[in-house]
Image (cartoon, helix red, strand yellow):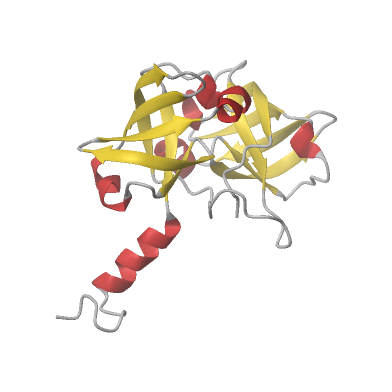
Length: 204
C-alpha cells in the first residue's frame, strides 16, 4: 500500500526487454534506505517488487500484464520516474490509499500555468469515467491528486509548486502518458452495490 506522496525523482538506467517481460533498473538512492530485495516500491505509480539492491540503484522485473496496462514499457534510459516506498503500518497517510495497481493509461491533454501552480487536463480511458468525481482522489503516475473537475473524456487537477518541483508531472509535456489509478474505495462500493450487498442500495 502507498499514499501517493512521492519520495524521490528517480532516473531510469536501463530497461531491458526480455521477450514478453522486462528488467528495469532505476537510480534512486533515497528510497533505498532500509530497502531489501522483496520489498515494494512504486515506480510511476506501479507497485513493483525489488529483486536486486545496489549502492544507489535497484532492479525490478516487469511482467507482461504490467507492460500491457501501464506506460512503463515506454520508458527509456534517462527518463525520470516518481518513486515511493510502501507505507509502514505506523506511518502517516498524507495522500490517499494507493495500491500501485494501475487502472489505465491516460494522456496529458494540456497544461495552463498559473501564478504559482499549473492546471492540467488529463484524458482518461472511457471505462474509468464512472470512478471520477470532483474533489475526489486519483493517483496520476503515482502522485496523489484531487480532481478539480470532470468532463467527457478528461479530468482536471491543479499542481502546487512542491508537486511541480518534486514529481515528473512538473516535466510532462502535452501528449505524454500517465498511469492512472482511481480510488479503490469507489471500486469496492460499485462492486457491493452491483451485488446488492449494501442494504437498501441497489436491491430494488
